Image 1 (cartoon, rainbow, N blue to C red):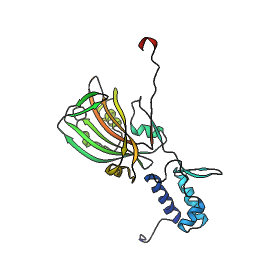
Image 2: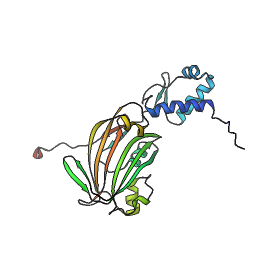
Image 3: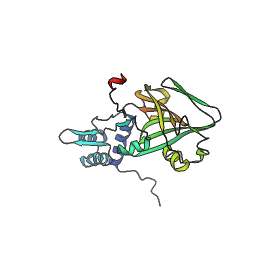
Image 4: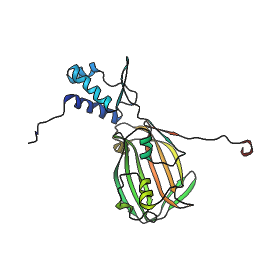
Length: 247
């Protein structure tokens, strides 16, 4: 018989409370988490319970202990190289994070979709599949994206598992490899209704990425309009100096 009065151990409840503060941004990367004495005082528990709570947080990778200084929220910042063609899932795995995806919206459209990127207008011919997804790393919402996928190139993609890497779906189910991505990055503020998807209460800086992906010369397979948490992401690019002849 299941014991309906069962509740998790106190140390585990305390660790979940701290985790929720980390996920909401109340405890940002690098911030000190409650000390053993703080936990004892706040939750009226023994030092053994407080120690177990901190150990649980460290074991799960939420915090880092620095000898002689205390325990601090682990830096979850992820660097994304903008000069490489690779998706969120691979980016998170390379960064040592556990990726996950939640589908939050889905529509089939028959009209064309147009976006202006870096001053140039691109049009994805209908019909296309429009999906909205929230992407997670270690349980933290990192980005919210809207993707517009060609149904001419990817027929019945709506019948696939859309909570996995779309690049993997393109390759494995349709034999399609991306050849070029044209993207535009801009700074925005996450506020109001937009905070809900990120499980945040206060406005934070963010990055908006608008892009168009090709699988052949002038052959558009998808477009995107994504928002990344500014406190969790850094974008990096490599560039070569212009030669004297090309100046």
